[in-house]
Image (cartoon, rainbow, N blue to C red; front, side, top):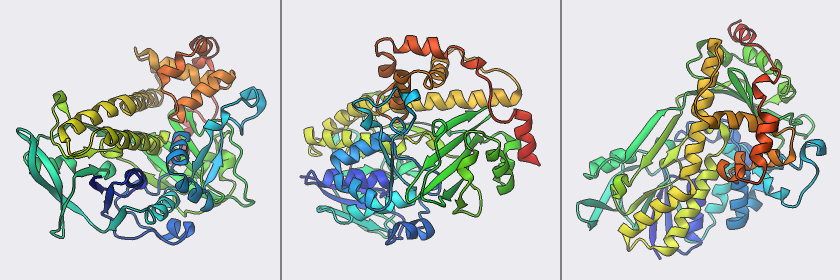
Length: 472
């Protein structure tokens, strides 16, 4: 089997590394942050400093697809998450029967196993540290790539990495799993490789959130989906571990009046004005401020432009390959889908055939995760444009019919059990939108029940009321 270097030891990097180690590869994770995971979930929340992850304190959700993968492929990770207090909840089973139509066989697939990012990452690390064939080295910063004999004429072949400490580490395969801050294009340029085709832009959102702890051990009752739209802002309410949860307001980063919601009192007043969210802050805050995060990028890298690899011997996975707005919570699920695709590709094509491996992984990426990236990006672009139109007092009417179908499906999901399950299938990264809408009769039900989505009575504050609260 192969010697593999994985650059990046976040949740997905560790998950991928465990998958490969359990296939008998010898795997070493190189993680730039030096601080080891603390000994308990509460210590992780209180004191773990992950400077390499700018969204470490951002609200997180580990969706049904993530739970499904870890239970099937890494059951000891799932067991450890439960042991450390991760919350298990099911948006279908936990909803009233008059909305869901009652229990159905298969509804268990909607179960989620989630928690605060710091807590989940600490737990995953505890299992990774005990995994045979896997070594985790912290405080190791990759500075550049090493090269070896070319597998394709004129295409550099990566044979390892060089660290800032001057150490040269050789491997049969290098996997970049260093996330949103990956320096891959710079590394490639330094060895004379073409830069990957890269599309990058500010996601356009600002996130303003706080975490809370229950006073009686119970989580708030969910009065709608986790992500809810209120005109020119959205709310994101996510259950977490050990009786905690997060409440986040999401706005356009260019919406200047709304930036006043960084103030705790203004933020609280706005949350109190949202009828399906206000009760989520009837609890004890575990942060003394509003955590504000912006300038998170949407990015996509093609390491095979024109079907010719820019390099062999190196693959990019998860957020190092492509990343989007995190408010829909798909990152870990898409990352683990990509990890499974990489593991399965290596079962068919070993790193001793680097040209074939690059091609096979490119095909697997296009089939498994590329559609999820494109669907998420399209949703984000439409939502940003809609928020801008509302702020300007106009109506957003794009030519793309997918926007109207998405809005209609959201409106119809509370009126039809089949539409509801289809909506959650998409939101939970279980089924792609086109597959859900191809179910017999579903699109017709969406159109019938959701076509009047523009006429739905608004809830929550008007734009003028929102601005007044944000600027008071």
